[in-house]
Length: 68
Image 1 (cartoon, one colour):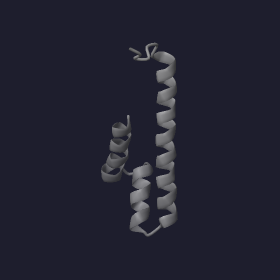
Image 2 (cartoon, one colour):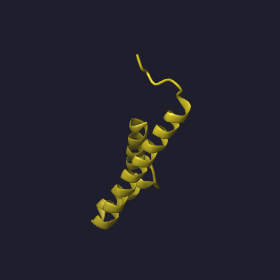
Image 3 (tube, one colour):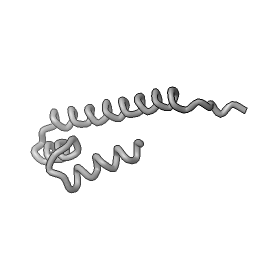
């Protein structure tokens, strides 16, 4: 999941006209460090939330625990 998320942000930076990645890249060209930092924080929070959601779903849906 982390690779997919990082790839989508990277694709936004390269070839999109909207999105978090584009916002950060565009703001960096105009030296808007406040927007860059907010974008980076949003990316981090989104990654943490995705991880928490997937861990929750794994605990609820995967009935085996791998105990030997």
